[in-house]
Image (cartoon, rainbow, N blue to C red; front, side, top):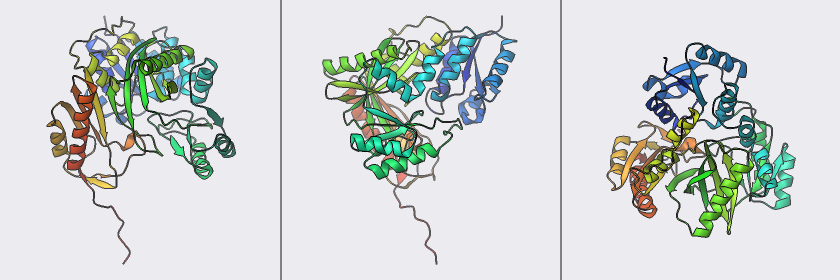
Length: 419
């Protein structure tokens, strides 16, 4: 009997994409990557992953490719580790009568305007918001509620296009930029709508949900406005019991209200006084290497659980073997224009900090870098583990500072002046 296939519709470019394929192989399935451009994912060639080149934005072409695969082997599941293709994967799984979330629910969830309305109608605490299809509508919404406000696309990932706007001029400029864009960074068409929403200043968290079960709450470190770059995470979040309960209650309520409840969901929230307001629900595993932190801190393999669910296998979230107790990640970002210098020495300096178990720079020496505007501006990461979150956070902070001090030459980058 041939090896069953687990199909992956595209992948995320960093983080767990490689791990999805590794877990599939460990479970006896052959991972197959369906992609318009497999070269976007270096791990695919490095790990000799079977790939099928197909226009993943064309449903008919994708279905034809899947039928060709089904003619030679049993397809056991369809997943995606990419925010942009989770709905496509869910629809394919349903068409093949395979396990997966409700495709309509995933599709609706990915549109933040639809998601917000659904949550508000269900009584889930959310920021106030307004949907705008024109610049004038965005400005009017900001003026009605009084800026500052957050302006962002109704679809997206990795904080792309999310910006704090402090007055009508900033709202108009950013709204125009977003509304003028017809495709996203993946080349997929984007809706001609944006969100104008309340700027919450309370601490930010995520709750990692699997099915309808809250696995863990995560403390998030977000960079300075006007952008919202995620700079690090601590697992688990340490909170007073009432606030911890409020986060879980809002997150699980949101997942149920949206009709999800299959597999992983990444729910982002901010505490507003004692209220846990849902910023957004992502119908997928968390990014930012949060699943790796959960594995190291709690012993719970969320990537493995998602792969098992996709293959129709039982999922056990109670195995805590090898748990350290806490884990933290910090991303390395430039604070000014600079040049990467000795990346090997930077990694070595970070790894020398007690408790640090992983350190990586993503770009080669000589690369010019600038302050991050979104996740694409991250230069690397460090991960630390310890018995409690305060210890892991301290180790990660120390390693981040050492890595940056070693890796960056903060020489101003100026264009040559004309003679």
